[in-house]
Length: 215
Image (cartoon, rainbow, N blue to C red):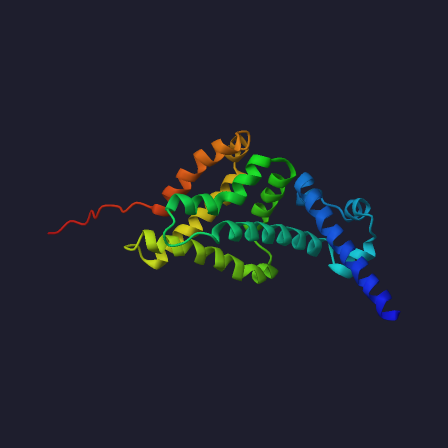
């Protein structure tokens, strides 16, 4: 009996924690980090201040955890899109898979896009505890390099890594820049039609001619 009560308390605590995370993310998307207040979070979530202190320690820690959770969901979606690719995949297929979660958010708009914008802003100067997501970042890079290495055998590994980081940075910038808002007004097919060739070009790169003169 005592064990059952303990399990019920644990489940209730987990539900409260998840509710606080969802509520915080929704309010961050609507208000931005400066507009987030502990009172609004707890009232909207139907929780109390003690619950925030117990599960997270502070409002800032709750905010960071909510954004981290959203980033993890984005990385999981990206990994799902990249997983089916192989060395035989094209660069355009790689670009489409790499950008798929972002393109979906742009197409859906609303809260989903606002949440990604929040993640992108915080990602410019990420909290230290995001280190636990490093393996997922590395896996996305590994999956991308599987295609890039096969398609661009003459390009050094370090440069290919640089290109994947630039591609990620391009998507991060796009969701924050005014052009991203313009792109979000387009149908999903148009978003893919416009974005995938740009990302493909960033991954493929272009060798500058050697301008070194002799003599």
